[in-house]
Image 1 (tube, rainbow, N blue to C red):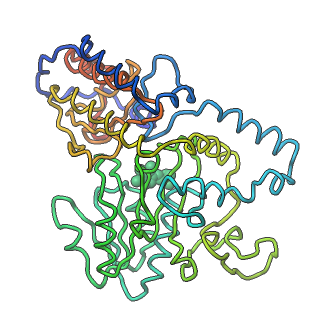
Image 2: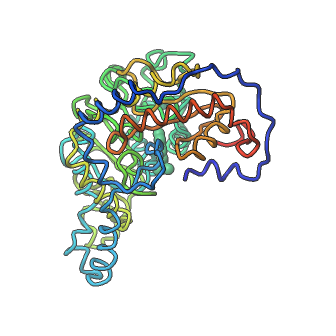
Image 3: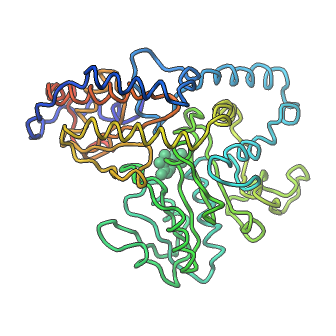
Length: 436
Ligand SMILES: *Cc1c(COP(=O)(O)O)cnc(C)c1O
């Protein structure tokens, strides 16, 4: 489970804040709606993927954008690495079981999901560490420029890393209520870092247009794909993106803490240098030379020994992704989020997520003054989404293991929680805004 509820435990109950009386919305369990969602599920080209995940009975999981579900064959794959490759193969498995090649090999299996030709993507480290590497590499490619641009509402680690990588640099932060990106760009800007899909609102950026704008001002573009990879098709090469990072434990279902990926466009490989110059990124790691020489190509972005047991989980998850049609994935994602927005609209909760499908990732974020308590009441009913301070109910829609009928059931659970006002019961209370 996400850490928020545990973090809140023991904080004591807060007085429920005044919330509008609930509108008298009728039950969604109607014959007409049942027929509609059943027809949509019968026509769903991705429906067979549901059986390839293990989900607990009675749980309706809308948090795959935070921690993806367990693919059914992952335990067997991890057990095989433990028992055979490690237990019996021992050190021979670096070659015989292909361990050494996994960071590049799994990178090339993620590449089609992000629109990258082979040889530009590696799997390694965490998103945060990879951000440090690509931000520093990008800054070094623009040595005469002293400004990093990012967005105030970014996931905090992204902002923190612009501080860590940008010591001695100025920072300009885009605030959606203030300047436009174009107003922040000039000859001093070296790098722009943005999230393709915003983690809080689910807003999707126009990657092609933004990257083109940034390049017109001579800066380099770094995209964070944590909420887009596995949620919608991404076109890194076609958009001429410079660098990108993303995690594999959200929509990709690689497992808790599974390593992240890093993309660097081939045109930058020779000139790019990254700061974490460990032996895995060396041109000849087994020569044990005293000095660092970067590997050719994307390999220079590697640092140290990969976490192999975690890579086994990601390897299993990618077996599924090898089979997914991303056009069908995007169509279903939008069908699910549109259905949820439509069915919850009468409840009157303001949506942070754009109504326009072209500007929407694969989540829906609704606001409620007591969002924490409402989410706790939903979780008690088996509908797992998450809470983001101060007042956001966040629901992730994963097209591989969610049905239209489940989306209807989730909307009905939310309706019941609001209309019954069960969320006012003290056991659901927490200090609003105290949990982040
Ligand atoms: C989830 C997420 C991260 C996670 O970074 P870690 O290093 O894996 O902890 C980073 N950026 C964004 C936008 C995220 O949504």
